[in-house]
Image (cartoon, rainbow, N blue to C red; front, top):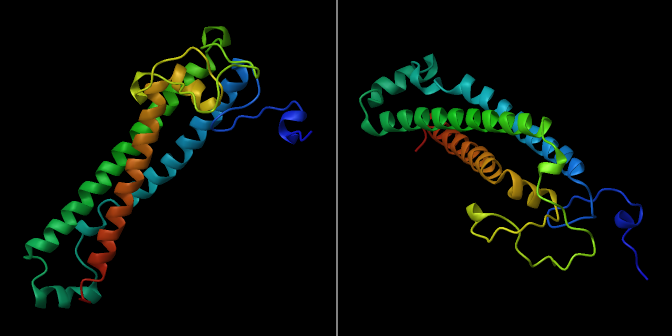
Length: 193
């Protein structure tokens, strides 16, 4: 008989799709860790965005000023659109990451004051649910069930909107920052066609 070492030691197994039978307080601790681990990178990204947001709005460097005047970069509609797009994407990334921090902080406050008895009941290990069963709420397009098997299921059952909002805003802010950085690289290499 093969025994999974994680399950045999009686420890907490909180994988993406299932785990041992645990009480709500252990899921609450894991959820606190999840939202803290989302909030910190969002704050770091927000500080980077805030520092670099207006970089392309300033006058060009001395090494590029002569080339810019010769080629009419200041009057070029394409380069102006690129600079404004960069600014718009950076402002959007800043707003999205700020919203991620606010929502994660609000959820952390709720989790800190949460009573495990008020949360959705958990499923014992001998449950009839399998890994293919859907657990979640209406926001994810699934029928709500009263059983929770993992930390993600716990978050979807108890904090569905906040969980989806934080994930969406963090990833979208990261993508906006990435596209804005690509535009900045293109603008920095404008001399080379």
